[in-house]
Length: 339
Image (cartoon, rainbow, N blue to C red; front, side, top):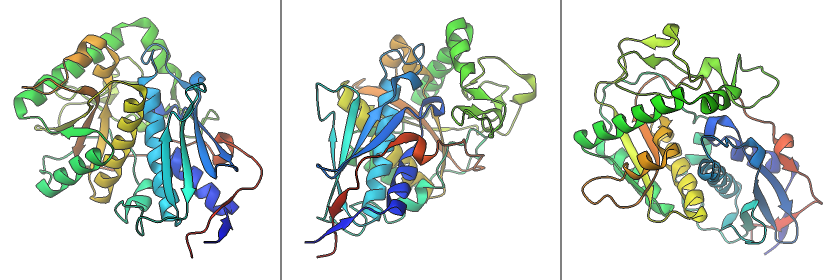
């Protein structure tokens, strides 16, 4: 098997795919470098991009980085290599959350994923706009659950009564966050006037979407303030599809795997033309998070509520440029996937 250089165009494409992942408040708390000896990408956390009030133990930060790792895996497979992932590979280096090693051993033309996940990376983003009441086909829901399972997590779609319970907990979390001055101030730090804001992080006001005036769907208000001009009295779905992502344990590796599972779910949904938005509010309050586990077993640790449906794509938030999140190293030679 021959070795082949990782050319600049492929490197940029892989990093661009990684940063296209969703992140908490679009903070993009990641940094990448190449390890030429291990022939691997290193994925590091950037703690200063965390939200200390809403995410004090960095669960959401790990979930965001895990989503980025999934995109990096998909991109590496797209360009012909087999990605080998290690989570928290060096316990003494807490900031190194994952490595993605490139090998020439292929597991198939797409690394074991759907062939359309790589193009889905460039079309996936959250839509906080009203969805229709068109039902999701059962085969799509099954495939979304399989995507979560493939990453070591579980995805459940609760019955209507349980869904109503989850939405009530989300509404309570939203009310608490809006009433907490510290959280409100922190939240507004990440909201910008438009997509051309030089900070190139956070959320432009144009992507925030409307608010349900009936509060049937407690969408996050990132400004932590009620704005009458953004209230919509109708059009939000009457029977929302809310999926709950869980993991069996509550370790840092589980937080990262939950991020990989989340992004795998979102990419599969995008490939099927299904929109999604994320409802993380109750995860941010320990008592509410414990109440999210599905009845009747009440097992597992809740990671994310995912709203699914058909509706407008919505605008995409900005992404940091690859050269802003990549630390250059000496040129790296990777195993060729052509024997």
